[in-house]
Image 1 (cartoon, rainbow, N blue to C red):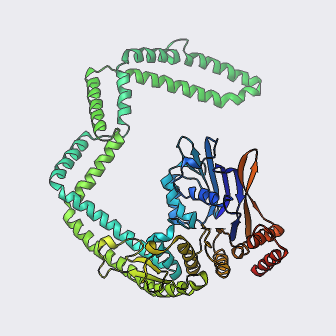
Image 2 (spheres, rainbow, N blue to C red):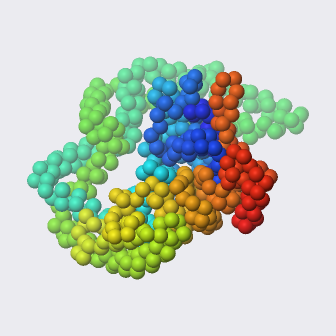
Length: 561
């Protein structure tokens, strides 16, 4: 659901902010008042191309921002997680989409203040808004949406989930088998390469942290003289000299013990004194042992240099680090093992693939049966509703094409069926694919029928731009009633010039042009009860609003509840 729309410096709009609510939100106003600018701005938040020509004259940049509430969904959550978009733990999720336009042509898209690509916005748009208007290439012209609407009508959610799971299991084994066959095709070359790499790395016997340990030892060997002098002096100062730390500390300890006999405060230091004595002794022993272990060995230094050179060569060759080289070894072993046992593994995978394909086709077959039954019911339900919306001569069919023996190219997670809507607006004409024959107005009204027939429950917003263009009062009443019915299950935004439609609104917004300082501005405001009467009366009577028009407007509002 769209909660808030904020537009700055777009066409005639200087700054506009509007809060929408659930149910049916109607936008009315004089022709040319700027209603389409608002719809086009909302379209920009669905990833549609936006030209810098939309930027208001005199401005260097423009901004369109929308606050959406969307129901959590597995596929949607995956998009957010893989894209790193923060959404929080709220239910429904809150998503702020902002599009910034620049006169230089550099446009940016942000989601929850994170910069994203326009392609990601287009991926998310099916969860946000559906815009239906004359001349628009909206979702009804995409046969993929026909399948979704039919499944919504049939209530196929569980069957779809079962089919998708079966398809994913089938695809996983198919991918593994394809990789195995690729390895088999390259076996003659690959086995020799892998054996060489495994042998080279196994002989090297690399260990994590080995390079650091060798560098430490190398540093000690190169500084034996200095380390010998330091450890000798440290041992003398700590223990060996007459005035060593150990000797003076022993004398001091005796004095403190004697003081403790006269003053109890010195007794509290007994444990600390013992700890200090132990520390001095440990340091003395450590310095002595370190000194005795020091021995300059050119042979060992050469050995270390050689080993470090080998480690450097192998890490450059196999990933840049010892850890990466070790991982490469394990991967090469596994791949070599797979190739060497590929014949047995291929037989196992082939049997498993056939079983998974059978499981998938069984699930897809149940889905196909349900769709075939639902298609007839859906066609009847839609045709029943064509008459009230000035499509009384139209015919509508849902055609489900199910291959008799589907090949792998026909399989996907939504089954093997291809669904397409066929439509004819005139008597004597056979139905043809809807995308080829339906006009913008017909398609908009048809989408309204389809959505109410399918009883779609969605958190996204449905936008209808002048769906009632070219129709009369009786039909407008039916359009309004259909919009009201659809608004019970999802938020609807509608631009209308028909009073019969406007009277059905849960929230009514008036779009106006204002003039000042030699400029034209577009504004929008929500109407109260009295203002709604005046606006609907204007829509009925034109410029001169009569008392009869006002009474008619009140009656229409009362009838709509």
